[in-house]
Image 1 (cartoon, rainbow, N blue to C red):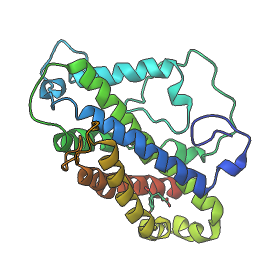
Image 2 (spheres, rainbow, N blue to C red):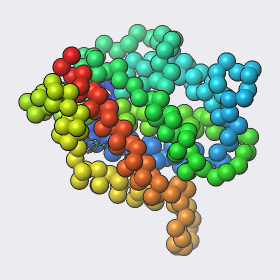
Image 3 (cartoon, protein in one colour):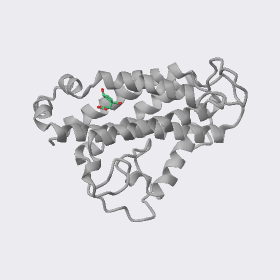
Image 4 (cartoon, rainbow, N blue to C red):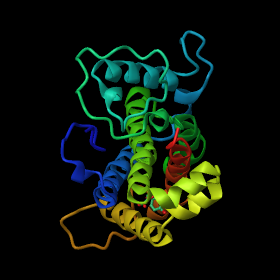
Length: 258
Ligand SMILES: O=C(O)C(=O)C[C@]1(C(=O)O)C=C[C@@H](O)C=C1
């Protein structure tokens, strides 16, 4: 069985809501640290401008992301069920044979990819919120940092497929009527746990405060300075990450009986 962490395991006890939620909690660290790293650089807008006609893609950033994914595809990254490419078409074949895992996800739902929404959110909304204005010319390291942020956000949001699969397996009788009726609202109500979401928003804000504070040997108070605004991290989860994860869950469930 392919575990939600992208490796093979015959331990089906890994596929339960508690272990899935534990993985979501651990992914918070990766996302927050990647945002802290990106915030080291100014927005570096020329990286995203579509004005370089000597590039085969829209901008230097798109070129960097597309090439990064092509290289990682050769290393087998996208054979893992929890990895979804931003440019999934025409990826190179992996150099090594894939792991022979028992699939976890229901194939029709496995192909869900909303990375176009993730990319738009990141470039248009999130980047301006976490970076200072300016251009330091460090385009390669900035683009590499962007790729880390995007891959962490994409993995977290598409983890909704695993959450939905577990929820369906736990209570097929609850979900089947809404799936058959194609009732998105009913599915959203069934899969939503408001108390869990509130805890997540509080926890990621606290993590951003702890991870993002300056550490020195004096006992000075941090004076409210953080590398990324903790309330923005909480807003990121509340307004985008969790709603998009739930969108993936609904889309996956709608295909679960295909
Ligand atoms: O933990 C769950 O039950 C999930 O569905 C995941 C998640 C999330 O994105 O963190 C999404 C919807 C729920 O309301 C709570 C949390």
